[in-house]
Image: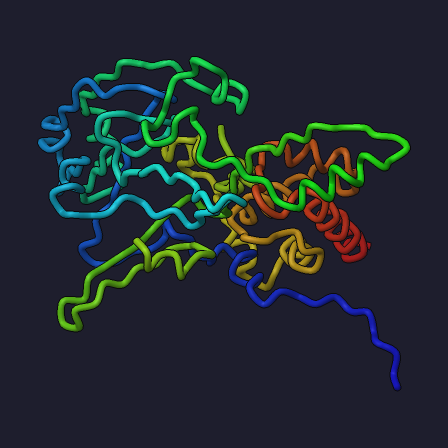
Length: 231
Length: 115
């Protein structure tokens, strides 16, 4: 039997990427294509006191401006939550609705508020700057300790104490018994950092409706193709 | 200036095209990544592929153009000099280790071709 030969395996996709012919979401072009821009919250926690997008609607090239009212009128559901764990007592995690577009409050910097659609991406961005949005900033919680401290600002009425679920796994009695017999006992508190995915491409979507076939085509750089069917 | 993806050569010198007005290029020779490999791949392009100096490829045109200019100015750069030379180009997925290796490999190939 021949010994395996070490050799460099070249990637099949490199040719286009090293010659400037790679295609990314922003390169997608189609006849009559419009471009969307999302107006996002600049505050971590605020009440929306007023929202006037009439100047956005009147801006050059703007085709459509959508707010939470439009989402509601269209009957769209809130964004789905992929996971809902249960704790050992059978109590399900409280899932708080994450609206497609924020209505009365924003809960994080970057939360989508308004969707602007225009003939070009620059027109949509320019128009977005004309939105008149008033915010009354509210107290924020940043860390786990902040969020669970007595008197902390409550973010969702259905999740008192800002607690979604108290989760414990394993056999506490067996663990306690094992520790009781140990010669030496030490303890440590481990804090899990917040994990945020850093996608190679920004969240982007390219969609078109094929009237003849009655099909809406959606192209998106995503690992979670199945999850898209929930939306 | 920003990520460096748009780096091109203006009269042979690497320039981030987003920082330059079109009129400033009047009368100049401009080479883009597409022009670099017009007569067969440049050794820097080959080295990026062979050394896995790219993953998603978004930064690659700028990385390649900046590297070609770096090797023109400094044909045998040290890893530290390569890192400094490419400081204006940001990669968000592959990381810089293999990019530095790619520039070193291209340097060796260009040296052999020259001798």
